[in-house]
Length: 284
Image (tube, rainbow, N blue to C red; front, side):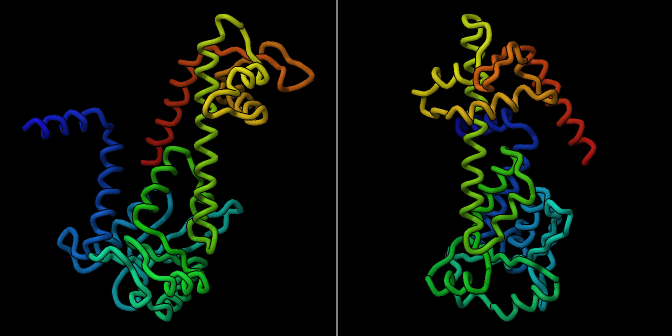
């Protein structure tokens, strides 16, 4: 009884969107290891969940399935406005690993040609053996686990990744590593912004206004220890008219010595949140 009550209390603290997101991710994890999940034909639940996760990230994803067809087709536009296509071969395995005998490169190549796809991904709970990995690398097939896909989906939402950035996961051989590095760098940028704002909040009463150089010396012994260049970039972002959390007080010939003050921060947060909410309502 106590555990049930705790779980209900935790769920009450989560937003409806967060609960819905968690449900999508949990369904994907379950279906990755259970081919007959949700009482559906073998692999169908996993294919449907893969499509749901990609749609959740903003792609146009559709589960196809059936004999002679790929499992999932995913489309998006690159930065030049060109439509790109990837096909996904979903491999739900109760044993937890996909091996080379589970993959038919002839069928995949046919599906790729049939759908005019530029990219191919095989998604499963895990991949075993160098034979499969070497073969996938030679053929240009991206190998993605369900956990990797969930982590990417969560990061895409938290960090505002573009579809062009997320689509790095389809690129072989180093796309997934490049995307992981990109996510790490963007997370660091967000951490620096939080640190800059909190430092202004703590120090502004005593110092009235602060420069990027001031913060460099204040923060150089912290765990993040941002560089002067990173701080300048954070100041430039936070002082943009569209954001306006920082207001320029005194301009200097060297940009790192230009001072700023934190003002109207709550209004800025509410304004940006209201704008995001309006955009989301328009997308429904």
